[in-house]
Amino acid sequence: MRLFFSGFRKLTRRPASWVTLGLLVGLLALIIVAVGATANGANTARDAAARNLVTFPGAYGRILEFITGLGGLFAVIYGAAIAGSEWGWGTLKSAVARGESRVRYMLLSFASVAVMIGVGIVITFVVGVVAAIVGAHLANVSTSGLGDSPTLTDLPERLARSWFAVVEEGALGFTIATLARSQLAGIGAGIAFYFGESFASIFLPDIVKYMPFSVANAALTTTSSGATTSGGFGGAVSALPADQALVLVGVWLVGALIVTALFSDRAEITG
Amino acid sequence: MTGAGGTSGATGMSRAGGTDGLALATRGLRKNYGDRRALDGLDLSVPTGVVYGFLGPNGAGKTTTMRLLTGLVHSDGGTVELLGKPFKRGDRRRLFEVGALVESPTFYPFLSGRANLRELAASGAPVPAKRIDELLDLMGLGDRANDKVQGYSMGMKQRLGIAGALLSDPKLLLLDEPANGLDPAGIVAMRDTLKTLASLGKTVFISSHLLAEVQVMADVVGIIAAGKLVREGPLKELLSLEGVVKVRVRPNLVDAAIKTLAPLAKAEPLAETDRDEGWLSVHVAADRAEDVNQTLAGAGIFASGLESGADLEMLFLDLTGGNGSPNGEGTFVGLAGPIDGQDGGARAGKGTAA
Image (cartoon, rainbow over all chains, first blue to last red; front, side):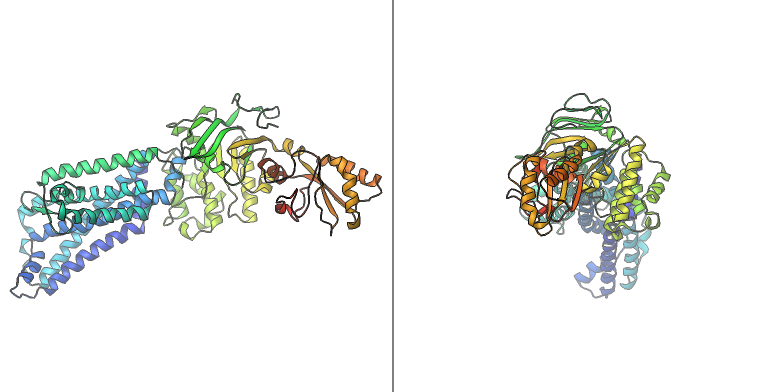
């Protein structure tokens, strides 16, 4: 456990953690408030969509979709940064030279990343809800749906699904950077993978719906929320059923961690 | 003294034989990087409780050895024993009693020195909390312990790296270029610390390019070249066989002095000399200064200066191919310029250790 707590302590002191979270929170708040401020009551489809974004209880779901979408991309980058720095800075080397297990070290490092992602999701969600309330006031939209009982009942499960999905995306970045043994290469490859999957969904939708970022988006959906599409570019792919997607999220997550563990165990640490 | 084969009676070390009483032993250690052979059957015997200087030119295999000894890379053959027990892949707990600084010290730049040590201590063997502050004080970093490492000088990072290596109060300490970046006072302090550790029965294994530093600090040295051990043994024994006598004569008598000393040196051709200053450097046992002086005087040439000593650098260059002169006693070595037509410039203007 001391290794896990050590990993978490490091993350809380790491500027990259708060810069990533700040960017996500800032963008979310900015978008929601700006949308609320520009929804001026005109009777257009665009204005209706804008008002819809800040209207509760639907706003809860849209905030979570934002977290899983853009947050997923940020998680890829964050996971890559954490794993890549262990190789690039040589801190993994120091731990291994002290007799630490490579596999344990890397997996517990990722466990701390997963917890940090959970903290980030909660903070982002809370800020998003506050921003949506502000946006609703700016758009003269009622906030009476804030206390919608079925939605609130559903919310913990949806938050948990969102966390699980974003963790899976973070694991992909973590694994890619481990394979690359580099922060920059890991971040670059992770971003390319993220957008590559979205781009591929145009041509190969039946395959891409099983891919990690698509299943992460699809897993967010619950019975009551009723979303039917997924994909980083705004729903180009017909989504898998949420529960099936959730299983696949788990498969991708475990697969990524197995690759990380195997590679870390066998790699020659020469940097 | 132990060469590529042989036994040192003084230390009980043996090559490719038993490993009793050794803190660290490798037998036939091999490592390839692709087609390149980094280690080619390395046999190291490091006695317990000594400071061991591990020397070799760039690319000789020193860092690869350090990596193998700390489990960072996997060998292609041979065996390693740490503290009397086999160290194989998966025996990571053997490293709980070993402290290491391999290559450059590595830290999280956004954490303080103290926090870095605390997080490093979370890996491997458990470390008492007070140990961190003790080590920070020992390394002279107590005042800057709460500053972020990214603001540390190279020397401070090096000291922090050594503190990290000492975290588990190791029985065997492996240090790669420990004097890197240290100021003179820091080097002296480090030397004292390492000698103290050795006096406490711990074994200190130092890989270094600073031959003068190793000469001052090490009890035993091993010299590696092209992935193989070319010499190993107690430093005093090695240097007793690798001496030099420097003699100064009037510049117009240099040629005559060379002719006179040639039989003593027992080697041809004679080396160039620093004619302007009149210095000759005679590669003979250090205790033969009297013979050199007597030989010159017998020929009517009187020395205006005479120094004798032994030099690890000379031994190192001879063994690793850095010196083009023939090996062994009796070679004239120029103080400046090439030797036997090869590069002897590294020694230009350099005196001989007394």
